[in-house]
Image 1 (spheres, rainbow, N blue to C red):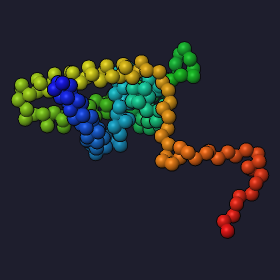
Image 2: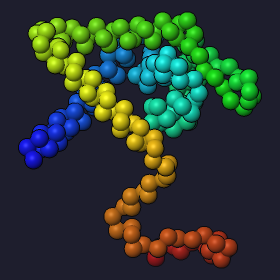
Image 3: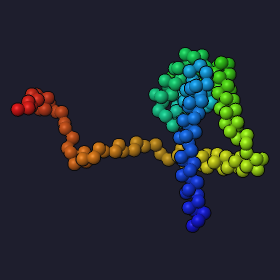
Image 4: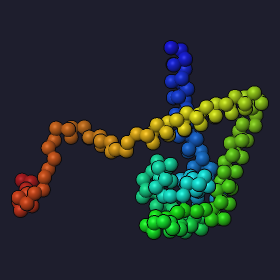
Length: 187
């Protein structure tokens, strides 16, 4: 039972680190003089660098809506980092590609973030770094398994939470009769 409790504690710690890491990376990208690039835009460039070339695949990878990806791609295209090409087999689809400038900025962001984070690890011993490497390998495997499990689940809409007190209220309908009645005036 102790191992299960330790696993839960470590999972909670990991979950608390992710938002902090995301805030740091967002700020580092935004303030790094990197041509107004956002962390999400960098994530799109990194996905393209890993050979994910369709907008819908990028949306799934980033866990955002296709509309979000469309906006990100439009900005990246205006900045000259991405180019869209009509797919040869289906003119309705586009294939996305990094431009030379996009590859260059993607590499620059990756290097900047790695350099800053690496500087923080510099004070660790070789044994600590090896242990950290093993932990990262394990976390990478865990996240890959979680992503696979998520991808295997059928997509469906989750119900929207109701506001308190709204559960018993009847929804108002606007049929033809309701449209003809003038609104009530307060007396």
